[in-house]
Length: 190
Image (cartoon, rainbow, N blue to C red; front, side, top):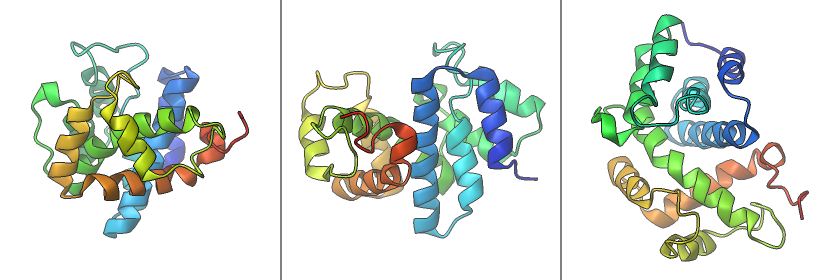
């Protein structure tokens, strides 16, 4: 049985209240759904995985606990192994191989969503709708900008996924445009 989006949202919001973490979950979900459509994969399964990948982060943000506290919650609830393995695989320090396209995609989009959101928020429009991949590439080089974003993880993710930087950035921008209002990236904050 594949958990539904409703199941995932309920579990996520049971463990996460911070708006920024909920928006991150929505962003990763959107990117996962976009890539699932691109690859002809199960959009619901991929979206649910993106939505819950950091369900424990608010209460367990350290490498000693994250994402294994969330994995324990998912295992207790009998979530599918494919989802659990992808959640484990998004933390490089666990050394869990990302063997499925879904796990590789989760790892590849996770950090990049944060960089793209940061790029959109510094634009005068405060919108992802007019953001170009070239602007993200320019900010990518500035290590002081969005310094919490692990660019090495994004690079490794792109390599594992077999996609070049410009294409990957473009795909994730397109994905985030689909949920721009929910993320506050539709220009309403300008």
